[in-house]
Length: 219
Image 1 (cartoon, rainbow, N blue to C red):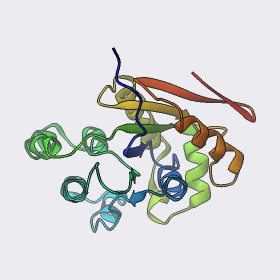
Image 2: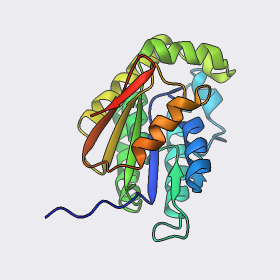
Image 3: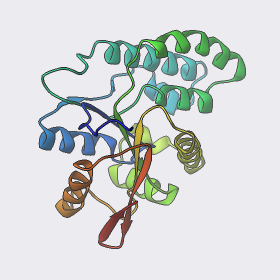
Image 4: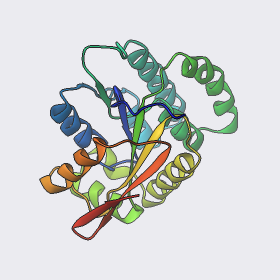
């Protein structure tokens, strides 16, 4: 007999660069009365990485690994008084490490990643914000952050592909895949209301929230 559905106490949102993770996390936290967990952003090596400086890639990755592990291990997890909404999952660190590091660097990284990963609690529900490279490129240009202007189209495509591959095989928690090519949760409140309505229903295993023009259906 399957367990009765319980509203998730710990929701994490993931997706490639400019998928809309932080914006959706803030909106969900507001509507659910949840504590929002924002990803560490003050990495001192990140601008050097975007500039392609020698040695910056490994330093950038190791800083993120330590910061993310420290933040997620310090959470007051369920049964806490309020639910949690995070705008990343710990495993994203490995996704980017596999893309950015050399084989030798990745071998060293993995010696730190594996014990760190064992200390982090898995979310009850992950919302994967899926978007095509074309959509991501358009949002990147519209946002126009100084460092991100150096991100090549080819790298953005690699990131999107890596996320697709990772979540195609994802089984660590319940997963809701949301295609955001035609959704804008910030500008169109109806889109947000549709998602909130979906989140009041059970999500078991991997399920999909698919936009069809101005409407959405759940499968």
